Image (cartoon, rainbow, N blue to C red; front, side, top):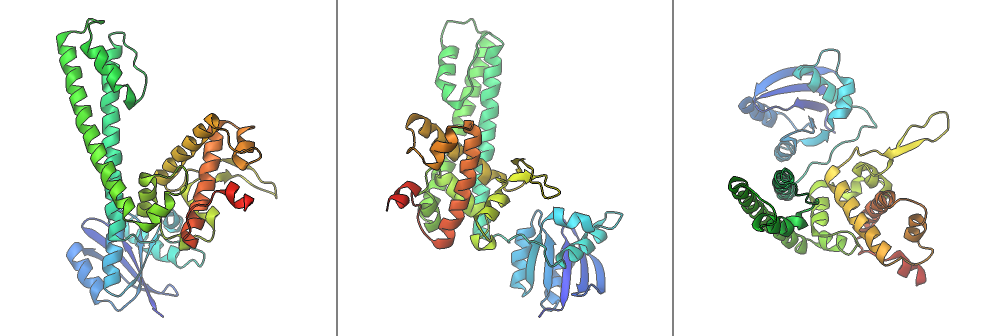
Length: 342
């Protein structure tokens, strides 16, 4: 049993260290530079090291684990209530240790280098998509000043090109040149998006769990890779509902006095996976509106009495629970309708 707990408040150049026994007796407090910190932590005997989950925390968790320490990450919102009065680096490091000593405390699973690499690729694609959307909106707003109302969507680029190159409206030459320049930038961003999407698809083909996840309707290669990159191992969740709650897909509770009051979805969890699951669920709902599901099924019953967006969120919750079961049991998706008929 390790008898020492080390709380670390990370920063770029100044690291605050709080060393205490498991019972809370303070052994030392130090403010170290980056070089001093690495020497200090490697000289320490194996201990339980607690780091606040922030920038570079996963890197340091891997490095400290190599040095023989047992490393745990703790979410900042769980540390904040234990900060005493004034907030500073020393108080933060002490609060990290106090929070980690709580028997019911939850910790963040450290990410591997491969997970962070896939997350970086996913984030890069999302960033380029936002930049392209900004360019498209700038182009639409410029044409709107000349009486042309272009609907939303990247699929309207051909319509925009026809408007710019046509003679139906009197566009000044300067505006026409600027529009062509924006179209060229949009084309460049589209090529970058397609390149990253192709890379994500290739990665999903080489991942067994990603291929398994794509057997579920509404889950494509991007969603499957996002789950691999951002979600911890499913063994960290007791049940599928815990995973759905981690994603923020369960309703917020305002319960008191034995009376349950449920609100909207909490949105308190992993936003990227939640958004992709809702998009995939909405695609399933749209398909069900064109080709009605089997009468009496869960989707048919809820579609008959609830708005489509609410049904999509409920279906995303159901998908999250199913994903947990698929990864825990190492099984492909099984259609509930076919399973009931067997």
